[in-house]
Image (tube, rainbow, N blue to C red; front, side, top):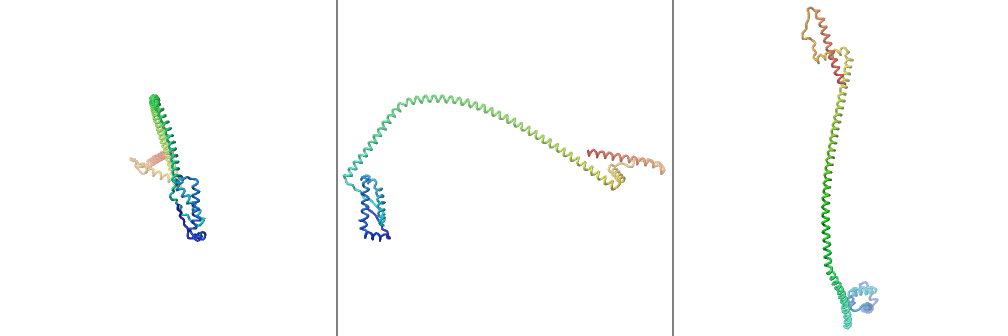
Amino acid sequence: MSQIIHIPTTEAPKVIARFGNMVNLVGQVLEPTIGNYFRNSAQDSDVIAFLSSRKERQDAAKKRISEVLDQYNVNGVDTLIGDIVPPESLMKTLTDRKIAEEQNTTFETQKRAEITRQALEKETAVADMQKEIVKADQGVLISERIADAAVKKATGEAQSVKIASVAEADRLKIIANADAEKTKVTANAEAEKVKALANAEAEKISVTGNAEAEKILAIGKSNAEAYKLSVSAMGGDNFTKLKVTEAIGRERIKIIPEVLITGGGDGANGPISGLLGLQLLEGITKKMVEDGGKTDEKKK
């Protein structure tokens, strides 16, 4: 084997002071440590096992030797195991033992394989005998399933027809109910519409009548107040004459007869003039009375 070490520059004086030179370091520390480790390690392993676990042995040796060298201010860089050449007689014994072990393993494997083969053949024979039984059972099962399928098909078809009939009846019932509900809603809506229109018309007539009555009352009160103020300002006789004159002009009342018969002399027209004046006054008075009656009716 080979051991690679490294002494840091700062640690070299300590190493030289302790061992004097590198030869003493190798003879007093490195060789005893390596020899002791591999002698101890070889006690729990044979040559074949040691060879098969060479890498693990090398890593373990590197770790152990590095721990020892650290105590002497030396770094263990790597531990390398070289070729291992055991004696030929030992190798033959170990080889024969390994071959026997392999043969025993092979025999056990073959034995298990034979047992497995026999079990397989037995199971195969049983399976072959069971083919006919299974075939017969399958035939019976298939026949039963075909019969069940036919029964289920017929039942399903009958159920489908029944469901379709019920669904159609329900559909017709729903349509009829919907039409009835539609008619009912339409009738109610039309009735509400007529009622609303009637209420609106009645409200309109009521409001219009009240407004017209208020208007007539206001006009009457205004005319009465105007007449009262005019009478107060002009006097009763003068206001009467004014209204008579206005009525004559508005109603185009004839004051002068179309035919006037007069007598001779200056005093002959006196009775006739008085008669005409009386007749004119009666006509105007009658007209004013009629107009007054119409005004009272409008107020009512």
